[in-house]
Length: 363
Ligand code: SF4
Image 1: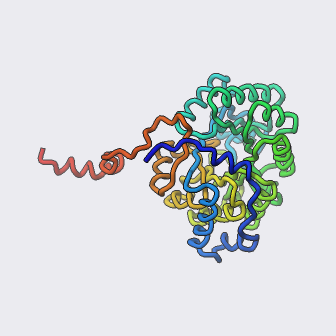
Image 2: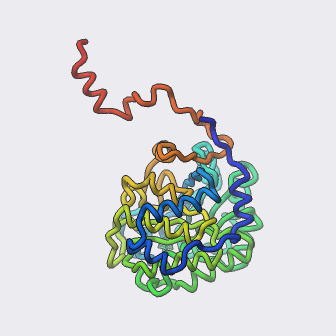
Image 3: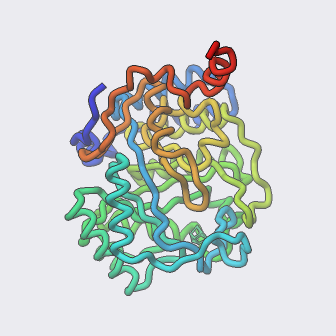
């Protein structure tokens, strides 16, 4: 199996994004979530749309938390929120050289885009300047696309980041407008919309998604899916709430793997040509259905999330290939891309088999 290099396909799709209409209306979206539509039908319809725009490719994203903790906001799902006492490691902004090295590692690990995350309400002018310098260096010297998640932005800061080469900005809606006060009191849903507007007006691609499992109803979930369609969001991470130590979500939902899969299908059918990304919590919530989730979704994270670690790159590549999809790598990816001849008999795949053979061996 040859190594897949980054093609222009994704870039072309991004330029033409918005050409598609939702495949389902609100009532059908609710019926997918409430089980009135069969799971197999939902997966089949979502897969047809997914392959139309993204064939069988899966983009791998790797997050880098470049500034952790010291946050004045109180987002209930986050271990870094003020007064959380979660014991999360706090550090100020990493040096430009350290971030650049992280970007080199991400590229060598196959990342198509380098995603930088800073904790906090939003960057001040000094931090914006530093971020702009780092973005310029990564895009020019490494040829990586850069996505930044740094909180609330106004239009001037958005323009500065765009001029430095920022390709995409992540700012999740997280939940519906009517449910927003339940998860955060220090900023509003409207503040989030204003940031997305500034990002969009600056010509930066919008990445915005949801966190499922924070006590919302299925109407809230459907509302977010259609709001992201209205905003013409290009990339939609679907996160599943991880009950991190120190969280303040009053009523975490009980998610099943089937329900999580239904959500991914519904988002694909409402936003057919957007990148639908399996975000945080896939390991714990989708569990054995993780590979099925690649039928509606076309991208995922490897190596961890905002506050916790997740499957590593090698495990993620296996997951993708086992389901018959192709990971999309950057051009400098070091792995051969070939499945080794003795793959089936590698000790790590069948540890118990090896134990058994050792025990009965005449030697
Ligand atoms: S999500 Fe971001 S803004 Fe909200 S508490 Fe966590 S670090 Fe702060």
